[in-house]
Amino acid sequence: MGADANKKPRLTTSAMIASIASEGQRTEAAPFGHALVAAAQQDSRIVGMTADLSKYTDLHIFARDFPERHFQMGMAEQLLMAAAGGMAKEGLVPFATTYAVFATRRAYDFIHQVIAEENLNVKICAALPGLTTGYGPSHQATDDLALMRAVPGLTVIDPCDALDTAQAVAEIAAYNGPVYMRLLRGKVPLVLDQYDYRFELGKAKLLRGGKDVLIISSGIMTMRALEVAELLGDGSADVAVLHVPTIKPLDEATIIEECRRSGRLVIVAENHSTVGGLGEAVALALLKARVHPEFRQIALPDAFLDAGALPTLHDRYGISTATMAANIRVWLG
Image 1 (cartoon, rainbow, N blue to C red):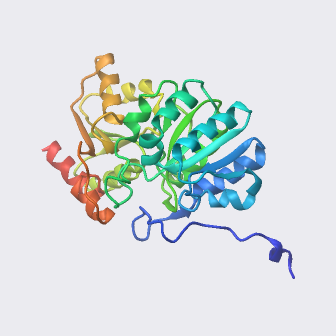
Image 2 (cartoon, rainbow, N blue to C red):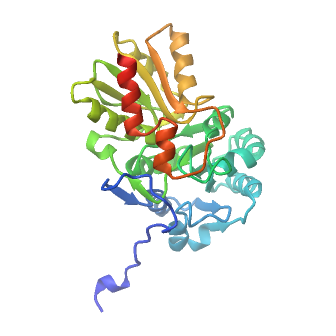
């Protein structure tokens, strides 16, 4: 047998997880799981925890390589957060994974009181953020950023793609403090490697310039914003894209600097309710700085959303590439 025969197979992800990637788009399988393994190889304090969802948060990849550092807490998200806090008190670095709706709605008090109030070094990585599932309101975390932004001392991250996710894992593993990160799992699109991008905690990054429109975005909406910029590059508009992967603390200085440039329509695009997310955070920062550009918001409605196929829902609620481009053309007149 050759040397390769002794190598472990590279696990990818569950076939039951739908991808948000477009047909033919480049993807990477399970970037969170593989990045956590890489971080754990460098730091023996890292442990992986979940509430009966290892396969659906890509934590099963970590569990294979580090079974003694993997903790299955069962369908008990409050226990998951409380136990993660206890492990952090003992000097470990727990990465606690579940779905975003369960982490933020069901376990909110435990995040607030057990983890954040004591500034414990827990990393909450929550899958299915915003409208990334068609299962309806029970699984659509359209309010998670609003809830987590309200927790004092909690860092909040919304990565765009596989590269962003992997780099963010490495940074939050090294950062001492509680973190909530929206988790992209399964076959995750890969786009930011084309823009000489590097994730930096607390920093917004201008991915491309443009004189007509500035789209300020986070998460998968940065991918959409870049697609819109290409579509409108046919002569309709010259679109700049500012990616904001850290929602809290917000890089107000960079946002204000870009919004001070006169003559551009400023649009905040987010995979979240219009209430309490990136749009409101940016609007407040501009108001305090007395910067008043023409301002629009692309976000999910303040409503319970329908169940269905994701492409249909993204069109219906205005966060698909085609719908975004059409609305921007109207706004530009």
